[in-house]
Image (cartoon, rainbow, N blue to C red; front, side, top):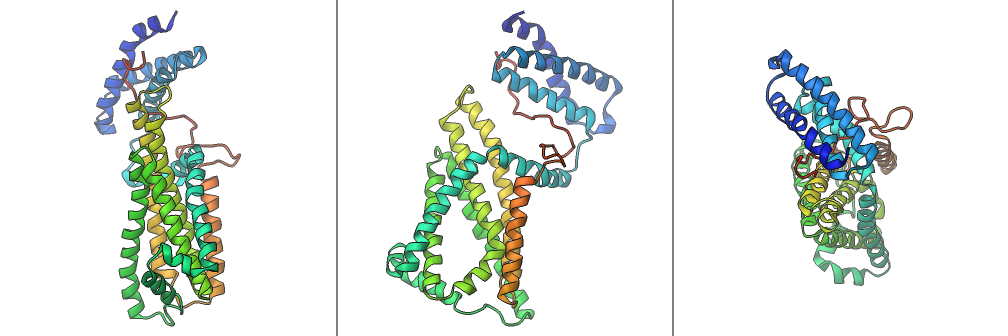
Length: 346
């Protein structure tokens, strides 16, 4: 049997399964009929066989992707009750997000280089020659940054502290999420906007950091930034990776059409940006309430080091089982891909 004949013979069952899945997903589990479940079970098993046949005979990535999606959706209907939205979000953050980041790790490392290299260069230059830093950032802004870290923000924790930090937490959420969103959204310009945003923010932050070090306020600055920096800086880099992934889907569609490639890569990019957004909310809470606390700097360094270790372990080990293999939130190891129509798979 050749590929074309196989598709003609099996297309009707695939379309039946698609229609059945659409109807069952739109109804509560308690309203599923016994006949629907029986039909679903039979079609699911036959499509599983079709998928294995396509994989063994290498009849095309698009056809395999389409059948794989049907199998994944059928599996979810048969073996999992529809999860509540909060459960879905928590499972994604605990399993899906770090798994997806590891899957797209090349984009993460490119984003990291685009941000970290100019940051380090600008920091070194500004540390040794603040006059050069003033060519990058307005002198008044530079002096304001230095003044902010010339002394500890608070000596005591009182009602004034709570009121001010609540306001600042909201500001940090707005500001940080805005930077991350720009890193991601500007990837729609074939990734160029993301590259420019990462380079610009790396240079700006590096110059400010170098100027503060040059002025002798490094201890106040690093003791303040180390705790929330683990979540904040990592999230910005991940947002950049999402933008680069979006741009890559437009530039290099591979075997897919440009529209399909943008959809496939775009879904992963949105998921990465969503996970980064959650990290930025955590960073804002830490920056708002813990980072400026009237605590010894040594305590903040210890906590900050632990935070960096926590982020590293989460992203490297999140979603793995005891043996180190990748598992989904429900304990299975099936692959879920974006759906395509049977007609597009020919």
